[in-house]
Length: 103
Length: 311
Image (cartoon, rainbow over all chains, first blue to last red; front, side, top):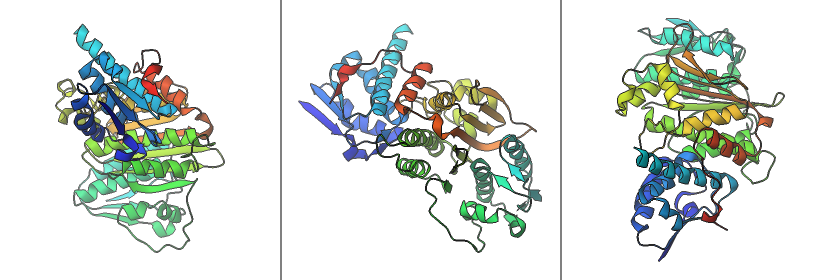
């Protein structure tokens, strides 16, 4: 099963609220990580997002499901700023895993 | 008690103003703000007055405005909606014009942070919402900084916030200011139950708030990178950044490292103030700026992962 999440339909064109992103992640991404072969987070139509939103949406997924989540998650329709935000959110999740491993 | 607002509230005068105003707002009884001497004020000065007046009104203290009839910039104060947000009203003897490309009046920060950010960025960088326009990068920087800081105001200040901004066409300077009258950064850490914050000073709490991965809200809602990245972006764009909270202040002068100190004159700001001033032409290729800011803050350590992106 594949899942596609059209963020502009669900949130609009400007995404900044980390608490909304967290609710979305818990309801719309986490439950499907073990069920789906691919989850496409679709940023098509999103003009801008900030670090708080994208980190809350993605970092926790990577932290919770490990590096293997990168073989399930894919990102579509990202403009150059959103690409930076997504890469950093993934990096943050991986840094947290590494931090736990060191602890 | 009467507080005579000084003639010039900008630059170094702003810091003195915070301390002087605080001395008067902390006294008991009615407060009269006398505007008769005021000649120059930046958006930062406006939001400082607004946040303080709203705080006093919330405490059911009476605040009177006087001397407006002899204030040479009374119409400007009206046009910037300072009087309106403070619940004051005097007749307007001028015509309001579209402020696009010039200024954003003092506005309360409400739940529509995404939309407010868009409106403010659009006002300061007209046309920038479209890709590859001359002001696109400026629009993106303003939207990013505003939303990261305004969401902090809404989510953990516990108070009311307001914002104002201005572009000076001749010098091409952008001035953005946000202030709230909430609990401030130190007490936000303490309210979040962060044990290490119990014995910090306001200045130490400010320094902590600018470290990556330190959040007042706690995980997983927030990863504590918003203010950190705002300070890194300010450094890269050679901006002047001032953050004041309680008795502490963090200041970054263009091209310098961030410094932390106490506000002068035993000053204190009841809440948090954030002021960013930068040149319009210092903002280019926002995606690259953000990428560099993330690397410098240690928030992006791996090489780019292109395989996760689909066209």
